[in-house]
Image (cartoon, rainbow, N blue to C red; front, side):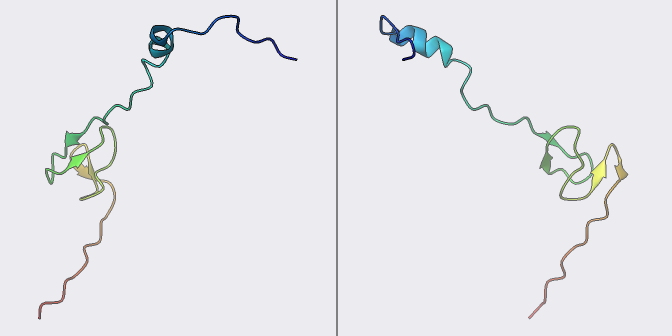
Length: 66
């Protein structure tokens, strides 16, 4: 058999262990080209620009006018 704890860990000790488990919101920056929010150091998924130049060509969907 494996060893079992002799005493129950207190709520404070349990909560201190879990202090770093909280979910943190991701850091977002505005794109210098289109102004949409994007992750830092990542190509903009909306316009395809990174550091002032176009890296990926993004195709725009043509909407039908009725």
